[in-house]
Image 1 (tube, one colour):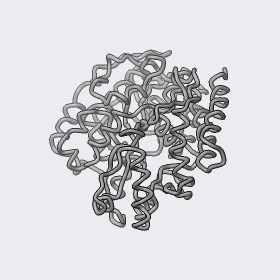
Image 2 (tube, rainbow, N blue to C red):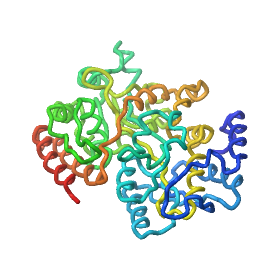
Image 3 (cartoon, one colour):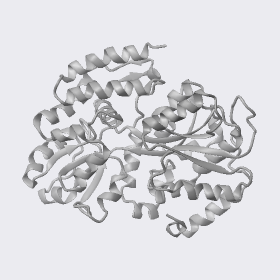
Image 4 (spheres, rainbow, N blue to C red):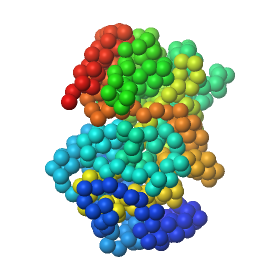
Length: 425
C-alpha cells in the first residue's frame, strides 16, 4: 500500500504539510510534566491489520529528526489492548505517548486521569463530522482528537430487491416484511447483525434501543435511563425477529466476520455491519460481488440510529514529550493524512470534506451513505465504567434474543444491574 495509490495532488499537499516546522499550530496541552517538551514519541495502537501506519510514521520521521514516532502495536483484541494500556498507565510508565483509543474508552481513561485534557481551539474540530467530536469529550472537556470513525450500515441484496420491484427498507416494518416474505423465496435467511455476547452485541442493542427513542444511561454514566417502554420496544424488535424466524438462530453466534461471511457467501438478504464489509463483498470469491447495496439502518418510522465506532487519539498523562505528541496527533488528523487513512488504511476518516470528494466517492461509493449514517449516529453510553456496562448489556440482551427472558424482564434486570454499576465508587 504505497505511494502509487495516492493522487499526485495529495502527494504535493503531504509534502507541504510535512515541510512545516513541527507545524499544525503547536496545540497546547496540560500535563504533569513539561508540556512543551519535545522528543521521540510512541503511538500505541491495536494491531495495524492493513499495515498503513508504518508509511505514515515514516513520512513524519523524515520531516522530524529528533522527534521520531515509533509504532507500538498491541493485540488485535480490543479487551487485550485496553488491558495492556491500563497496566502501563497505572504503573506510571512513560512507554506510551499517544494512545489510539477505541471511542468507548475515552471517558474511562479521562476519568482515571490517564489522558491530558486538550484545548478545543487548537484543533480544527469544525472540519470534522460533528458527532465524532462528542466521542472525544468527557464532562465538557476535550480529552482526545477524533481519528477514525465508523457507523453501522444495512447491506442488502440489490439484485433480489430489484427483481421483486421493491426499494430497500427504511423502516423496521419494511425490513421485517421483506425479510419474512422475500428471503425464503430465494433460499435466503432474512437478516443478521452481531448477536454473540461481546461488544458487537452491545452496539447492535444500543442501535435498536436508540432508534426506538430509548437509552441505557444518561449524564455520562451517572444516571440510569434504561427503564422505559422505548427501550423495551427496541429490544423487542430484535427478539421478535428471532422468535418469528426472520433472524436465524445461528446469528446468536455471529460476530462481525461470521455475519460478513454469511452475507458474502450468499446466505443473507440483509446484513447490519460496518463499512469494511464493502470491499470484501466486492472481492473475487464473493457471491454477492456487484449485486448488493447499502443504506442507513432502518428505524421504527424511518432511518434509525447507528452507534459510532472508531477511535480517538489521546496524549498519555505520563508522556515525556507531550508537545511532540500533540503535533503528531495534529498530523494524523490533517486532511492529507486522513485521505490516506481511507485509501491506504481502509478506515473511515473523520474529516467531513472527504465524504463529498468526487474522486473518493467514485472509488468508495458507500461514502455518501456512511456520511448520512455518521451524522445521524450517537455515541455508545458514556461511562467511566463502560466495560462493566457493556458486559451487563451483552448478557441481558443475549438472554432476551435467545428467548430465555422477555424484553420487559430484560429492561427490569438491566435497570437493577446498571444502577449497581453506576453507584460504585
